[in-house]
Image 1 (cartoon, helix red, strand yellow):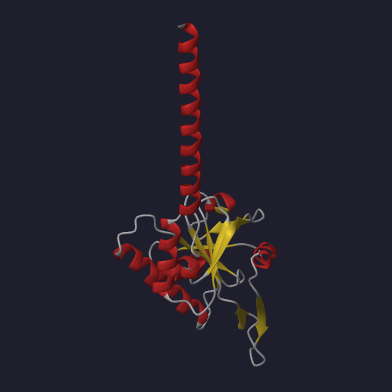
Image 2 (cartoon, rainbow, N blue to C red):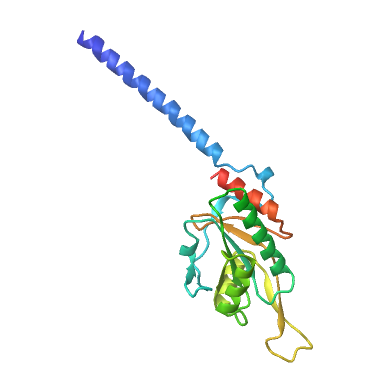
Amino acid sequence: MLNTQKRITITVAALLAIVALVCGLFVSQYVHTKKKIDVSEFHGTYLEKPREINQFSLSGSDHQPFTNASLQGQWTMVFFGFTNCGYLCPTTMAELSKMYRLLEEKGVTTLPRVVMISIDPERDSFEKLNNYVTAFNQHFYGARGDEGAIKLMTREMGIAYAKIALPTAEDAQNYDMEHTGTVILFNPQGELNAFFTTPHKADLLARDYQLLLANT
């Protein structure tokens, strides 16, 4: 009798172990599938393995530190530009503002933080930068730092920019900046997860962002 009960106990334990194993495999496969982005549906460039970035230290337009820790806890879209920009910056910021409104209209509650980092700290004061970004959207944020810090960040993220002297300018501060218009997306872990090259379109940015939210 005892042997029979012992065999039943062993059999039940073995069956439970098999069930647990099967359930574990099913959950593992489900989670893996859910987190995998269909790249063919993504209009920007999605990094299947998000990339950590080096430590940086800037200051926000509210005079608070803007560092790697500032990227934690929310999705963050970063654009490198400057307030005296004639075309690329205002058009990019306008599309980002339209994207933000589209997400709000669609009832998206996890909205991205949109940050413009100045590549022209010589002319972009905290006040000027803050006035510029909030003119596009009251929730937008500006950040600046010394030239060395900006160069390290842009180089790591593949952003090219250069100061162009104007031949007819008599004022030393009358110059232009040429730069790429890439928008970079960081995930809530502060990792580089995707980037978007020009031309930017608000509806595509919103669609890509929602795709990421639905699969993470």
